[in-house]
Amino acid sequence: MSLAQPVFIGLLIDKINLQVTPDHFQEITQLTIMLIGVSILDFIVYYLKDHLFSKALYDGINLMRDHVLSLALNQPISIFERNNIGDKLNKILNDSELYAKYKVYQVPSTAIILIRIAAIYIILFNMSPALTGLLVVIFSIYLIIYLGINKKIRPLIGEELADYSNVMSEEKSKELVLLVQCTECQHY
Image 1: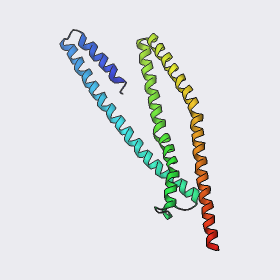
Image 2 (image 1 turned 180 degrees about the vertical axis):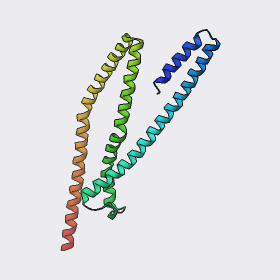
Image 3 (image 1 turned 30 degrees about the vertical axis):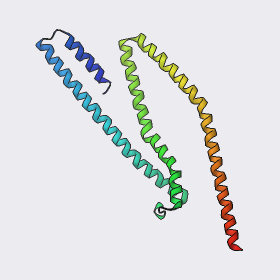
Image 4 (image 1 turned 90 degrees about the vertical axis):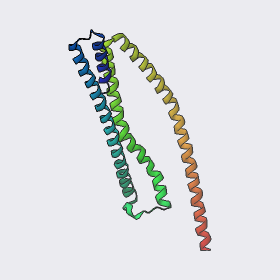
């Protein structure tokens, strides 16, 4: 719908540029009303999309957390109150929130963006094939550069995550050693 707005604006400008007669004035009025209607409809559709995606995301995160906790602990979630274990589990389950955001919001948004890009290219191709070819070349170069940079960055991110994981496992092993020492001290 938002792609239709520039088309309507172009038609409206064309009609205004023509000699204004009562017949053309009626066409201008109709095009203006259509443009306003499409703009309002576009706003409503995108507002509803964001609202529904946010609601689905919230429900999805809670459902995933419920299932993950129930399966991992073989116990219902209701037995866990706000305590140290619950806080640690919350930190672990933030990963499920990221996954839910990706599945519920990012995938449909990406599909919508790709559809809009395809529609823009179709409109541009009808207007000027040479300009469309130039834009495809520019977009392809940008994509190749982006993927090249991303390919170089990913191993560095992996190394950082591995270092962080090692530090966390060392801290946990220190806590475990202290816990064992404390329990041995209590037995003596």
